[in-house]
Image (cartoon, rainbow, N blue to C red; front, side, top):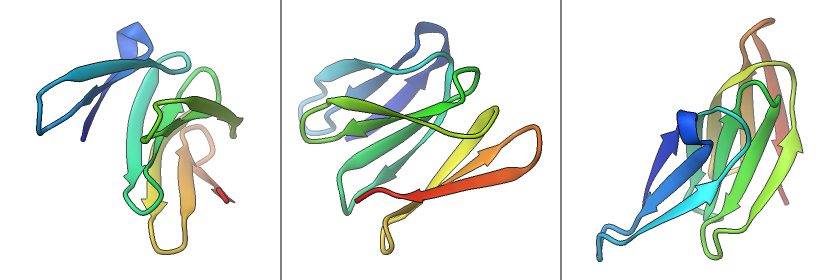
Length: 100
C-alpha cells in the first residue's frame, strides 16, 4: 500500500499497488506527515492544528484519534518496539507512547 497525505482536504489516500485502486480516509485538520508500522499494519498521521494523531488501521481503514503536544509535525515508528515518536514544533518536544 502507498499512503499520501492531503493537507488541504484533511485526508489520506491509500493506493493499492497491485490493483491501482484508491481509498480516501478522513483525518484531523491539516494532516502534515505520516509513518507506517508494517508490523502492526497501522498508519500514524500528525494533524498540526488539532494537536493530535490519527491512527489508521491498515486492515479496515478505521481511524482513532490520540491527543499529543502542541503543533505536531513529524512522526516516526519503531516497528520492533511498536513505539511511536511525534516531534512537536514549538518546543522541540518529542511525544512517545506505546500502542498496544
